[in-house]
Image: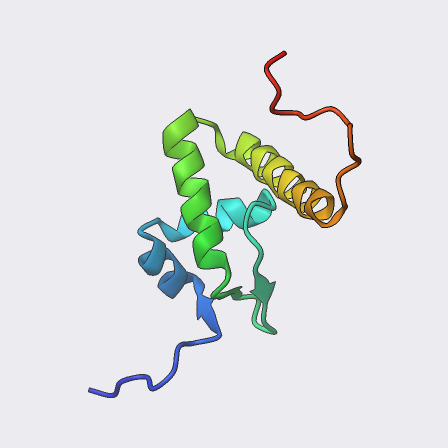
Length: 106
């Protein structure tokens, strides 16, 4: 039996579904909704970058924790990504001395 010496850079839909413990049809649905990113090859088959594995885990946690439908998951994921982006921008900015603290309890 041959063994891979390196991790694959991308996964086909069957391998991706197996790696995430989901059904391939659900994976296809999430691609159509824009929740997961995938590329199509010349034959029209879906290929997923390995970076989408944590994205799918996040979707599964949101679905289990908040009982969101799949369409709402796309919106929530986009909002969380936007929040993370804004937080990274504001962390790089120096704080204005004497300005309000968002953690203050007064």
